Image (cartoon, rainbow, N blue to C red; front, side, top):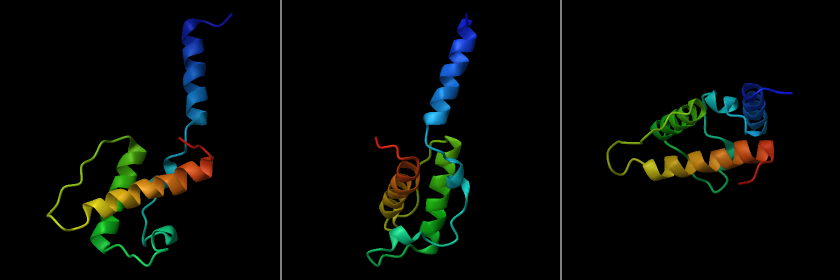
Length: 97
């Protein structure tokens, strides 16, 4: 018979194995992924830096806020980040929320 702690540990481990893998999001993007340029758009270097920061922070489980001057593309960075999560995490692990 399993103890309460052992049951809890097994539950946590099973949840971890079902969760999408985040480790590949720690890798820094040197150039924008192909799936972002399908419609001809291109991120500026500072937007790619912001996207990398969002990806890394998410993989670490850290809450973040994008804050800079108006008109520098925070909305585009956020959309690119969310689309990247969908493309890289959900499609790879075949998890659909």
